[in-house]
Image (cartoon, rainbow, N blue to C red):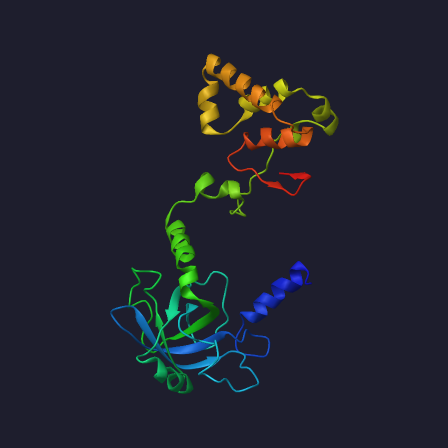
Length: 263
């Protein structure tokens, strides 16, 4: 089991240039041609950390259709990969007949359909003669198409929760969770606090738009407090479960983890 620093170091080494610490499933290739259908043809591929035993291309799962691969443009052959590199997802495909693929691998040739997942892939994205890194995920594409299409759709869309700020995705502008029962009351105060007080404070302090709208009207606010009180008293929540429930209505994002940790 690795510590955080050791794990990060290991990942960085796996993403590095050719060598014994690099990933064996990252290949440096030269772009030979990309056709109008988004199929890229690569030549002279080399694993950054080749296995000691010779690869039997007819039976191996390495670079086998329809494996999922990520393709990253490189400034020069063998460049290290960075976490910020843009990955183009694709599917390894046959050049023609499947029986010819073993010979193609022996000749260090590879074909990747880059429009399987991204239907709007630009065939001019990879320049002929340039170098790329092909990351072989060793898993079948059909299993991952829905996931990757959903990911691409989300990448194009604006992040929810204040553009991701409430998800703490912006290290330059972190969110401090001050609007919490546990941050405003001591454990003893929480233990002795009655349900009506917790609910009333939540309605007044909540940053959720629906609750903000409701509390502007006194009669609606009272109805909300009353219905929440009825809901909570009809359940068998202990005090910390009650606090977690109340906190979940205070902020746009709420995390409850394990049985005794409430964030």
